[in-house]
Amino acid sequence: MDETPFGDDTLHEECGVFGIFQRADAAAVVTLGLHALQHRGQEAAGIVSHDGAQFHVERHAGLIGDTFTKAAVLERLPGTAAIGHTRYATTGGGGLRNVQPFFAELSAGGFAVAHNGNITNALTVQRELQRRGSIFSSTSDTETILHLVATSGARMFVDKLIDALSRLEGAFSLVGLSSSSMIGVRDPLGIRPLVLGEFEGAPILASETCALDIIGAEFVRDIEPGEMVVITESGVESIFPFQARRRRFCIFEYVYFARPDSNVEGRNVYDIRKKIGIELARESHVDADVVVPVPDSGVPAAIGYGQEAALPFELGIIRNHYVGRTFIQPTDSIRHMGVKLKHNANRSMIEGKRVVLVDDSIVRGTTSQKIVQMVREAGASEVHMRIASPPTSASCFYGVDTPEKAKLLASRMSIAEMADFIQVDSLAFLSIDGLYRACGEAGRSKISPQFCDACFTGDYPTSLTDQDGADNVRQLSLLGGAG
Ligand code: AMP
Image (tube, rainbow, N blue to C red):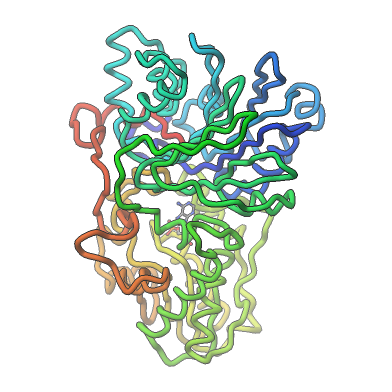
């Protein structure tokens, strides 16, 4: 286990959540929903169902399709209500005991919760609870929610949950399941996505709309920032229990994280990525012969770039789809190996050409370095790297996996130094205003930014209580985020 504070193998996670209420074979539907959300986390998944009398819990390490067998889903997870979670966990994340949904028998009855996001005062609250006698069985920040619900003095269950969530800061998009309800909540800033859907009358909660499409469900609406929906046999009740704040949706969901066929917060992700490419071409023109994306994440932006620059778009790099994302491999040596396993240059499209390479982001710089070397070896006469986001210069504490600041290339190098490091003829990033323009804004509002863009600006929209407590820093490597 990596004990380094904020180490690669700890703390930050990415997750997808899905739930359906009042539907036969609910767990089977959840399996499909989670499969569509697999890009939000590939290491482990869990489902909790309720059959009218009791709860059933099943959790596995690995991909949904590989681990949730027909027997698991149809025999061991019966019921007409179920929620699930897919998670990118790391070696420091404590193994299966940290896999969600979490379930507890509370005085108010059984309750399961699946969480996307990261709570930034979880450790502080956890310590306080431990001092008062709470016993934690995982190192996940999500368990803190259950303990806060358990110890709340409120009378009604929903009030207990509101009470619990009011104590937390950071990002949470939650799906909860009690014996009589399914509950969806977004934190007051709405940092992570959550949508409401419907399939033949059965309400659905999901991280992204692509999880509705997979089963042919209808999109109803986004859950609003700070909104809680309580879904019971009598319908969907909406409440706004938290103090209203201006929304700060995570802009990195548009850059990289969400699936391009999803619509989030009223915008189509693919469309935004194309517009990002258009802005990038306007801002950082270079004479070239061909635009080549780093697949898959660079593809929509490269299409936009090619259109705007009137350059041919070619698949000059081919991706092998049978390896996982290189980024999330635990060690540097494997990460290096992963890049070679994953991408190959398509020499016929590159040889003798001035290539504009488009990727969504540079994090550690490992991917870019390898890709550029490969493109050069395939005979490119010039390589110009264009990045479809501003330099990633600060860590995310809200549920996207970014390494500690010191490991972010942009936090320790100027753009010229980065260009030298990845060995390109030129390197340009999209400006922060260009990114906001692609998202339909006039630019980034200085007084009240429209998005959470902390990974690009270092402007964190919530307190970071756990980070600020010097004492806590040593402990943080032990505390897993929710994802
Ligand atoms: P790096 O080698 O660390 O610079 O990795 C950059 C690549 O990782 C980019 O091509 C992105 O597509 C991808 N990437 C960026 N952020 C993430 C993330 N949070 N999780 C997984 N992959 C990411």
